[in-house]
Amino acid sequence: MRPGERVATDGEVIEGHSALDTSTMTGESVPMEVTVGGSVLGGYVNTHGRIVVRANKVGADTQLARMARLVSDAQTGKAQVQRLADRVSSVFVPVVLAISALTFVAWVALGNPLASAFTAAVAVLIIACPCALGLATPTAILVGTGRGAQLGVLIKGPEVLENVKDIDTVVLDKTGTVTTGVMSVVEVRRSIGSGVADADEILRIAASVESASEHPVARAIVAAAASARLTLSPVTNFRNEPGVGVSGVVDGQEVSIEAIEGQNTTAAVSWGGLRRGEIEVADTVKPSSRRAIDELKAMGITPVLLTGDNAEVAARVASEVGIAAGDVIAGVKPTEKADVVKRLQAEGKKVAMVGDGVNDSAALATADIGMAMGTGTDAAIEASDLTLVRGDLTTVPTALRLSRKTLGTIKANLFWAFAYNTAAIPLAALGLLNPMIAGAAMAMSSVFVVLNSLRLRTFR
Image 1 (cartoon, rainbow, N blue to C red):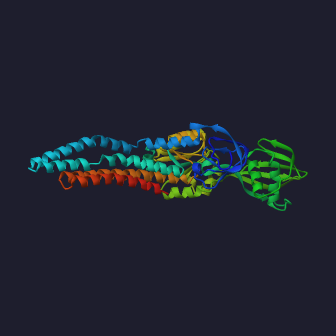
Image 2 (spheres, helix red, strand yellow):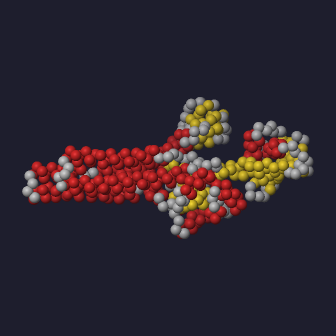
C-alpha cells in the first residue's frame, strides 16, 4: 500500500510502518499508527509510509461489506409500527373509494347538480393520502439508520427501535468495553532505603529485563519506558518462571521482577539482594467511559458493571467511572453472564447488554437489546442488535438517544398522517375543498412526512 491508497481488504500488516486514516470506518479523526502485526480494515486510507498487507478477509466477508449489509437490512426491514401502518393502508383505499361513492350519492340525493356531486367525490379521492401513511415509517428508519452509521452506530433491524424505548438498565462488560483491555503502568514506587535516585531508574532497569518477554505486563512496562524516553540496557541470562516472574542480568546486576498479589498487577523489582521498588500495572479505563456513564445516568438509566475479575478490581474500575458499588457484579464466569441478564429481567428491568467478546455473546442475545463493540469479536457482533463501530462507550447513550428519537419521529409521522386524513376527507366530502386545493394538500402531506424524517440528519 502506497501513501494515499485505500486498503481494499481486511488483513494484517506484514511489512512497513504507517498511519492510516480510519475515519470512514470508525469516525476517528486521528490517524491510527500501524506496524508489523497490526490489523487493518478495508476502507482505511494510508496517509504516509509504505506497508504490505496480507489479506485475511475479502469481498463480502470484510468489515465494510458487513456494515453495509447491516445498514441495508435495517433500512429494508419493518418495525411493528410499520406493520400497523401497512394494515391500515391495505384497507385505506377501499374505505376512501366507499366514502367517495357515498359522497356522490349523498350530494345527488340532496338535489345538488351532478357536476357538484362529481367534484366533491373527486376531491375526496384526491385529498385522501395513503402516501403519508406509507412514507411515515420507512423514511424515518432510512434517515435514522443512515445517521446512526455516520455516528458509528449500526442498527440491525427496525424492531430494535421499539425495544430501546423502555430500556432502564445497561449492563457493561468490563474488559474491552469500559476498559481498553490493554495493561499500562499506573505507578512506579521506590522502596524506602532502595538507594535508587529516582523512579525512572527502576522503570528503566525493569523494562530492560522485560524487553525479552511477551507477557502483557512486560509489554506495559516496556511501553511506559519508551513513553518516558528511557534508554534500555541489553539483558543477558534472561529467565522466565511462569507464575512467579522474570529475571536477567542488566548492567552487571542480577535483576528479578516478581508478581505481587493486589487489586492491580504489581511487580516487585529487586537487584543486589534488595527490593528497589514496585511497578503497578492495570487494565486502563477508556478516557470516554466516565462521560458515557454520566450520560446514561442523566437519561435515567442505571449502569451495571459485569466482570469475571475479582471484586477489588471491579470496585476500582466502578469507582473510577462512577458506577455505584451496589451495581457491580464481579467474579462472573462467561457461562453465567446470560443468567445475570435473565435475573435482572426477572426483576422487571428492561436490559441492554454491552460487550465485545465471545464470552458476551449469550448475554448479548439474551438481553432486550444487545450492543457489541465493533472492535470486538465476530461472535459478539452477530449476537447483538446494535454494533458500536468505534468501540467508544459514549456511543452507547448516543445509540439509545438516536433510537428513541427515530421512534418518536415515526410516531409523529403516523400521527400527522392519520390526523390529516381524518380532518381533510370530511372537508372534501362537504364540498369545502375543490380538487386543485385537495391535490396540493395531498402533496404537502407527503412532503411534511419526508421533511420531518430528514430532521434526523441533524441528530447529534
